[in-house]
Image (cartoon, rainbow, N blue to C red; front, side):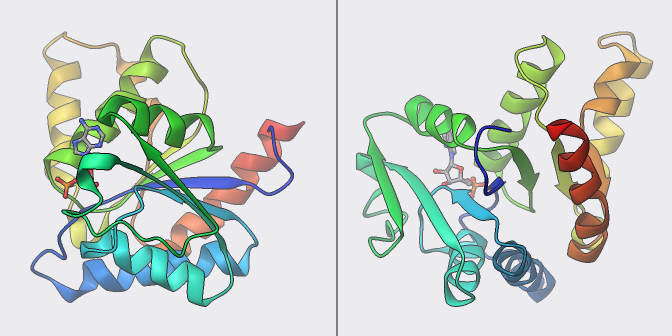
Length: 189
Ligand code: AMP
């Protein structure tokens, strides 16, 4: 691990979604990040559950590192009051800066952007570019269809079974808290 304070990269929706449980999970995660003295790395927007996780972490005293491309500053309401705000030229650069400044990735419910971000870190893991832990926060079973799709891809011979070992599905923020610490501990040995 490169830094004393673990940095957790959160990928999640720029919308709130239908169920209030998604925003609640985002707030719970923000609070857990602060309580454990982790740093939040995220896409720097102040909308949807992205905004929820950031405000919650910030209000509870966490360090927040946000990364947003110039052209989304308006659309995603770039949050200017973060401890660190990096404004990039491109989306690719955004993902790279988020990734290189993180020790683990947590994926909350979200849309196409969140799926893109998840599959990028998953495919990088698949080809051995990193060993950072990836967690899918499966609030109300939101990611069940995604897990089923991955299982289908494996069953049909388009990926090795190990693909399923590159991410951990957790049902709640509490469950994430129980598995994420031992995971980091083992990486620092
Ligand atoms: P969504 O899940 O569609 O609400 O998007 C979640 C976040 O992913 C938003 O901040 C989007 O700007 C971001 N996003 C979408 N596509 C990309 C991409 N190709 N590279 C980087 N970020 C992206």
